[in-house]
Amino acid sequence: MASFAGLAVCGQALVVRGGSRFLATCTASSDDDSFFAYDCSSAEKKSQENKGEDRRPVDKGSDTILASAFSTSGSYFALTDDSKRLILFRTKPWQCLSVRTVVRRCTALTFIASEEKVLVADKSGDVYSFPVLEPHGCGRLELGHLSMLLDVAVSPDDRYILTADRDEKIRVSWAMAPHSIASFCLGHTEFVSRIFVVPDHPQLLLSASGDCTLRLWEYRHGRELHCCHLTSLQEPAEPWGDKRFAVSRIAYWGRESCVALLCDSIPVVYIFRLDAPRQQLVYRQRLSFQQRVWDVAFEERRGLWVLRQCREAPLVLCRPVDGHWQPVPEDAVAEKVCARLRGDGAMLEGSAGVGDGFSGLYKATFDNVAAYLEKKEERLQQQLHKKRRQNPAPEPGGQATRVTSGDAAARSCLS
View 1 (spheres, rainbow, N blue to C red):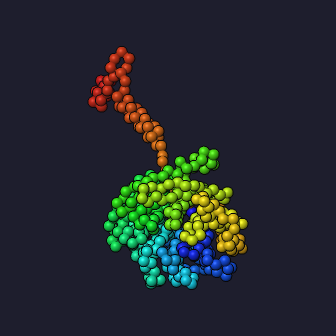
View 2 (view 1 turned 60 degrees about the vertical axis):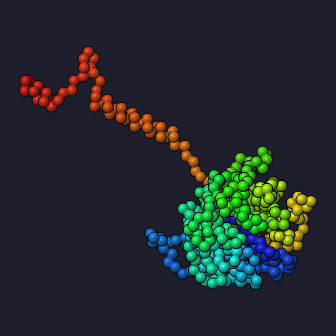
View 3 (view 1 turned 90 degrees about the horizontal axis):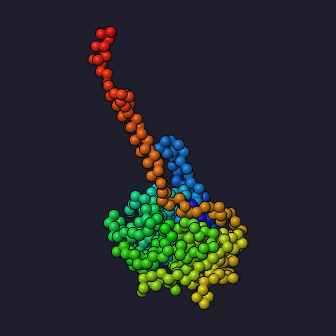
């Protein structure tokens, strides 16, 4: 999967990432000296022989950040990069605590609610846990799928580990015994790109997929409560009206039970309201942008942050005005971050030319019936030709006679 620029927000801490770097700041201050910057290319790398099984050099990776997340309280921040490293930070104040090596490149990570461990999901379908209180502790294999994992989540009470894979499944496992499966949430017809456990309603799960649906689940029993088809929200005149797309981000705002949905490579953010008593999602509006949107994240006190492909103002804040979400014309924090990003233009440039992040995950279909029928007809013709050679047709005016070796010898003697 491709790696775009991304956002992460927790409390008043905001992180913008792009390429191998990220920039962190506090939204409560508009001072220019409140930034913390980090570049993964400067992180330590484990010394090892760069030889594969065939003794050829192994790709060392590009140091591009693949996934990142805050802990529940915002005290910790973790990321994984293309060089197969897990880097852990303390945020108060910002400090790098450790750089650890993971087995394979990762697709998603999350902290458990107690902040004792960070869970890392990788492309081979495995989930490893790494201790937080022991920053240099080794990883431990928790569970595995037979398919690539695309997202991982944990219930607010740390009882369940939820994993989403490429083969349309959402698995709910017991955290104390991950080999024991509590339930499956089945219904998607394409890969499950994102899952999100609703903090205010810990029994509810939101999921999105390459089948262009957003679904609501009671995940402990694997029961689907509501399904919203995103294609029904599109307008016919839109240039991407007939294009397949997957959801790249699910964000939640507890103040008004708002759900923001960002679709891959589409400059639109869909806004829903979660009606928990009725167990359904209510579509409210759409936020359209002229540029490509990379990521979105809610800040409880301020609103919805949107990171987009715009050199002058890549970060914009949106707030509800009379029940309708719209961009804030002037925001001191947004202007501060945008000024810093403009000064470091290379940070987001690498994401500008990246294609669809999920396009390679769709199931490929092949119509091989015609080829099968053609080969079958060819085999039948070959068998028919063989039979004709073994049993030639009768000569005109008589029956075909088969000459044996004994008859041929008698005729030669008579002659």
